Image 1 (cartoon, rainbow, N blue to C red):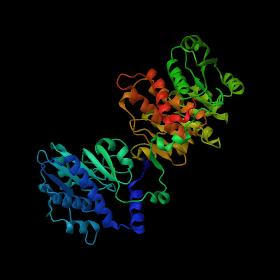
Image 2 (image 1 turned 180 degrees about the horizontal axis):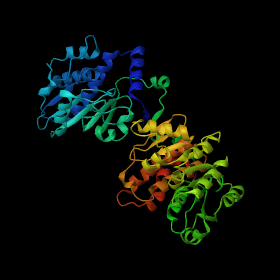
Image 3 (image 1 turned 45 degrees about the vertical axis):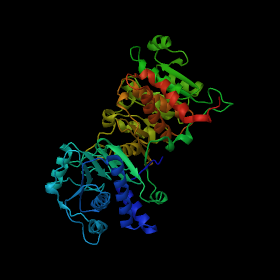
Image 4 (image 1 turned 135 degrees about the vertical axis):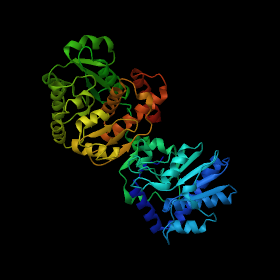
Length: 501
């Protein structure tokens, strides 16, 4: 599976490099794109009563004219509607010249029941709101009982951010070329695109070496080779030791979920660090997870010196305030441990985020993972907002750079970002994860994978994917307690025969 994601600008560069290298010129690529779209339409929607092709003045419209010609040549009933003539001497103008159908002004477009509407108005590079007769045509298409297929991205959708620019064509499916764009995967773009089809139009993957994309779809291809697998001569501490901080007596469940997830990720040992008041309740619920008293930073220092934990989880159910900050800063002074700060650990720094960021930057390597949802993100990075930075990918990148940490920016379209600019968009998330405690499980999975030696960015990406796959395996009715065991089955499938049995 290909997992590189290209911005509209990078896709334009891929086109240019392909044209320069041959054998296709720009019109050749346009013909290939139109042919791919026409094949899909005839195979999937051949029973449509007719096809309406809406064409804009640019290359997107040129694709549309090629599609209209090929559909007509197949014997289909086709109407072409134009929002403006292409500029002379362009590939789109040539496509219009080769199309035997006479385009009509788009203001007259009225979709009929049972027909299919092809949106070839504006491509991924659109950067302003659609107005006038084109906007009216999109509105009529959206309101009609018809199938709607978009070329490249739905018109009115920002291909970089997934954000609507005003009126947006609501596609049943979208056909794009070579690689996906961020707008295909980030909400609400993912919903507005419908089913996404990526077609090969003759662009060689060799162009990626020159473009060097820094955004990826979070598939196992991105990190599977780095998954830790136990070797025949291993022992429990060789497989990593995770420590998870518990909250007080009435707030212990979240930490236990993280601890169990860390254990199910393959970590050889997991210890729950508990305040004295919660030792009894935690002991009642733990079997394979070890338990250690930890009330003060001095207790933590002693644990670090004697038990040599590989990674720590701080935040789930811990409580917000000075104690959380003290433990977080003590952990950041320990140069060897990998850290996951979640929930209360994040919120505890909302008034003084620079204290956290400065402590994180003191480490030579990236060893901190922060896991904010939208609310926590706004508390820690109030100036990196949707108004000034519309792209969730760019917001995550900016936060990662500032905090010197891996950011897991949670949501339906979770984005994982590294300070070096690498980013991944997760696509297997599910509403099933909207249940109390699921985020605590995610934190434990990330810490468990890092404890076993997986690099922080790849561990975060793997944890997010495994988390979603576990939920999909369980299906409706899952609760957070179900997720760690399901995650172990997902990991087993991913590792395949790498595990020594």
